[in-house]
Length: 254
Image (cartoon, rainbow, N blue to C red):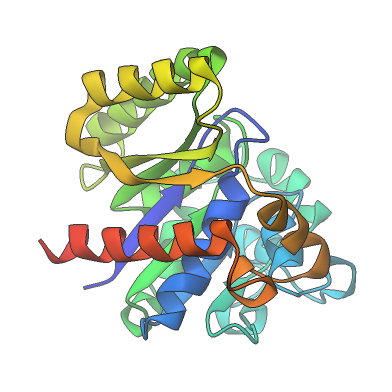
């Protein structure tokens, strides 16, 4: 069975793409077959996977509007996982699909053609509750929410959880909230500790035990087109994502 996870948070700059790329690399490194889907027009997951978005002949945009088949868009990365890349063309998808039939299921219909080839499909959603994010949620069996432990992150979380409930009720009954991952965590900040405690109080076992620390090496890795697993194996960021990968696999196995 293929596990399809959307990495989503409507707030930007919360480590969403960092989580999508590094989780893909860690799962691939553990022997799983992984597909990373870049559903964000900023294409940071594409660049962070060593693929130049400027030189793409086809991207996920052509896939969604139906002018290309999935095999002509799919890219192999040198980090073990496959990629459906993105570029700025994806900005136009919202307008192109607004009157399309089954517009929420375009991504689901496409990845269903090769989902059997993968153990995990990770979808990096844009930082908004848009039609693109809706496509990601409708294609997924679960959602992974990276969370910074700060006040405004809690405010946005309630909106996202409500959106997930609506998608579950009306569009994709297979969608369930897999869990919350605390990222960019600084234990020296009292507010971070307080928000972390609130997350555990309200969401309990939905909060992963692993905490991803604020780490310079994690921030540097994308500029080199590398996951942290290949940029600095000894860094605290890599060790944390390795631990998270184990926890994620254990959660699915149980």
